[in-house]
Every structure is written in structure tokens, then in C-alpha cells.
Amino acid sequence: MSSSSTKNPAVITCAIVGAELTREQTPYLPLTPEEIAASAVGAWEAGAAIVHLHVRDAEGKPSCSREVFVEVIEKIRSRCDVIIQVSTGAALHDTYEDRFQVLETKPEMASLTTGSVNFGDEIFLNPRPFVATLAKAMQERNIKPEIEVFDAAMLEAGIHLADRGLISRPLHFDFVLGVPGALAATERNLDFLISGLPQDSTWSVAAIGRRQFPIAGLALRKGGWVRVGMEDNIYLEKGVLAKSNAELVTQAVRLAKEAGREIANSAQTREMLGLR
Ligand code: ZN
Image 1 (cartoon, rainbow, N blue to C red):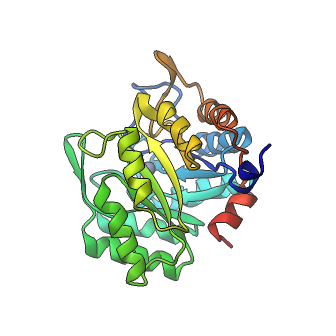
Image 2 (cartoon, helix red, strand yellow):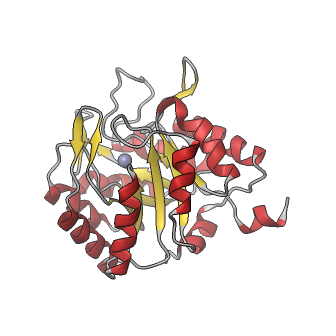
Image 3 (tube, helix red, strand yellow):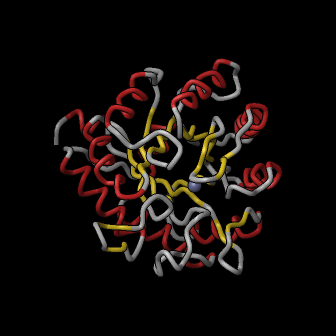
């Protein structure tokens, strides 16, 4: 173990279910509150310090229901100390009000996408006034935002929110690379984003689809953190579906070790992110 790896352990986030995937795409997708909670606990046992959370309704469709979020969060918290990050992105057709009220579930973190972007053939809408409202609400509730960067201008938009006093420093970013219509998952793009980070920032990379593990490996070698999980990628390798989120986290742990990195547990991650 080198001293640099001890000083900069890798944080693994697992995005458990997302809002887009269906059981037709993978039969292993967790959908009920119990399945989502069990999958989150499994991811934590495998090495994830943070879970990025969406929930589904009784039919398995994406939901912003505060009741379902609270049920899932309580089930997870009764079994482990993983950091819970709720999604304020929700699904593409959810209203701003529905996306906002997820913040009332007392999470430690929440995602904050700081701009609008093409998302496949649809548009993920994040007008600046709505983003500012979300940021301010997170600050008031002591929720740490994860600034989700799908395109380069979102990095600068996040810094601008901090300049306006709506996000407390140090900032934490997640580069979501490879969404069709947004920034591609390439090393050149990753290097460009890293070059624009404020010096005291923490950062993670979530690459979509088959680029998940190659880009995760790169990010780990460059000193970053990684997000894996079924929301972003359902394959362990070409043609082999992951049977659980834990399997995807285990693969990320292996890549981190190959990169000479220690794995941060949830307590260490709370300290690094300044969570209370
Ligand atoms: Zn998400």
C-alpha cells in the first residue's frame, strides 16, 4: 500500500436501478422497495460507500413517491451505514415539483444536474432557475449535492452556483459520460473536465454502457472515484448480464486494486465529503 493510495482511497458509488431500465432489458433489475434495499445493502457489502437511489412504483415504473423513498431508505439504514444519495433527476417526464420533493426524505446527498441536455431522443430539462432552487434547498437541508456533469458547461454552472453561495465548497462532481446526445466517454473528455475542476474538489465518473469499466479504470488511475451499477450498465462483460449490483461493484473494486487504490468505506467517505 503506497501512502498516496492511503491518502486518496477510491470511493465507489452504486446506482442501483435508475428510471429507464426495465425487466425486459435485464431480469435481475431490483424493483420493489425490498429488492432495491437488498440490492443497495449487497452493493455496500461488496464495497460501495454511496448508493445513488431511484425508486419504482408497484408496477415497476419510475416514481418520485416520498413514501416509497422513505420506505426504501429506512430498510437500507436498518441494515447498513451506506451513504444515501437520492436522485433529483428522476425520470425525464417528472415535474419539477415531484423532483424537488425527493429532498424531503432526509438523504445525506442528492444529485444536482446543472444544465439541460439531450438524453437519447429526449431532453433532460434543468433550467437554471430550477437548478438554483434545488441547490438552495439542499444547502438549507444540509444535503451535499453531487453535481452531475453530462456536458462540459455543467461543470462551469456548478462552480457558478458556488460563486453565488448556493452550494458550499468544496464541491463534489460526477462526470456522466456516454449518454447518447451528451459528452462521449473518452479519455480526452475526461481529461478536459478534470482540468476545469476547482482544486479542492472531489470527483467521480459514471460511464454509460460498455464504456463503464474501461473509463472507471482510467478514472481510478487518475485519482478519481467511480460510479457503477445497473442504472448505467447492466453487463459484467460482453454478453454477460450482471446478476446483481454487487457483482458490478466487485468488478470496480478489482479495478481499484489494479490501480493501486484502497477502497473507502462509508465512514471515510463521509469524512472526505464533509457529511455530518
Ligand atoms: Zn440516476
